Image 1 (cartoon, rainbow, N blue to C red):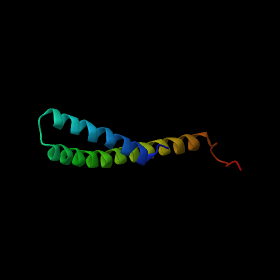
Image 2: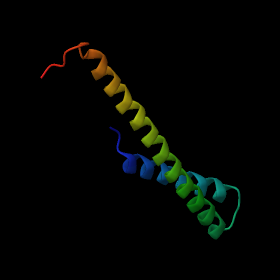
Image 3: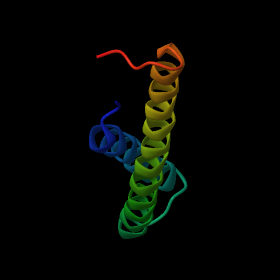
Length: 78
C-alpha cells in the first residue's frame, strides 16, 4: 500500500513553492503569493490524498481478485 500522508505532503510542498515562485515572478505582493500558495497547497494536499486512497483501493481489489482466482473451485484449502 502507498503511504497517503507522505505523498500528499510532498505534493503539497512542491505545489506551495511552485505557486509562490510563479506569483513572485508575476510581480504579486508577498502576502498575495503566500495566500495563493497556501490555498493551492491545501487543495493539492486534499486531492493527492484522495488520489492515493483511490489507487490503494484499486491495488487492494486487484490483490483480492488475484487471490480469489488462485483459489481452486469447490474445496477450500486450509
